[in-house]
Image 1 (cartoon, rainbow, N blue to C red):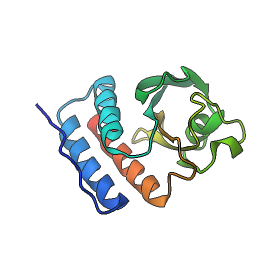
Image 2 (image 1 turned 90 degrees about the vertical axis):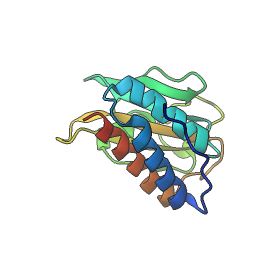
Image 3 (image 1 turned 60 degrees about the horizontal axis):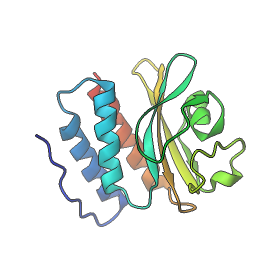
Image 4 (image 1 turned 30 degrees about the horizontal axis):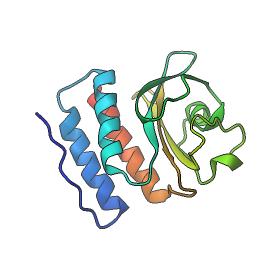
Length: 162
């Protein structure tokens, strides 16, 4: 049985390194995307400060559909190119949004969210798998360290699926 360890990190790079290591151990040997996504979201929720939602949207071939998450109930379906998640999926680039109210077409699933980071999840051949989405009630919560850390965490998640 895996148990998360308390993380005492001096800064964001150390926090994300420790989270990535715990995620590798937590997901080791399991290939089910729902099981791994659920545990991954719970791990991040437990350790990342100043967030109010984190979770997955899986691509079903036409649109993004909500997957395992932590936080308030979420939007169920998001079209490619719509909102922060749809933009990350369509462009296949990480979106770091300091002020969601200033993002054209932002979808307000949780009115308490003020900033957001969304990482596209891609198969090895470049096909879209989905997105990893994290929201914060603080404006400008996410920066370059968060982007690098989230991308590293997402690489661990995708590697766990084989």
